[in-house]
Length: 101
Picture 1 (spheres, helix red, strand yellow):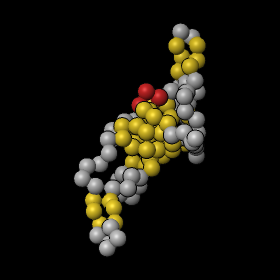
Picture 2 (cartoon, rainbow, N blue to C red):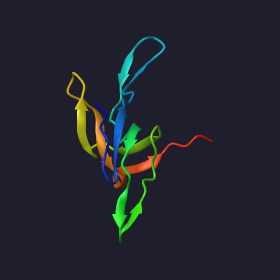
Picture 3 (spheres, helix red, strand yellow):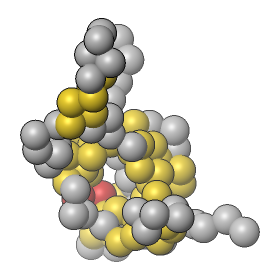
Picture 4 (cartoon, helix red, strand yellow):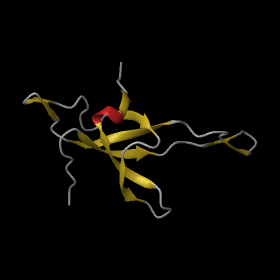
């Protein structure tokens, strides 16, 4: 089964953040504060929204890496620990896109 977002929504797979660092001697140091922004990979994209009868297409495409706020969107899939692995995001919840030089 494939989930296809409607209108201005994107289905995004959350890329887990690295919250701990291991020193050369083997000590594991936890991050003091988790990042406000999360990173994700766009899995599928809606066709856009309508404004004055004209369809405005989405700015993101499948496969792009995006940044969004931690509490944005609606969780649609969970892992065994109860953490969201996929979310639906509106185009206004996406703050940045990674681009290769």
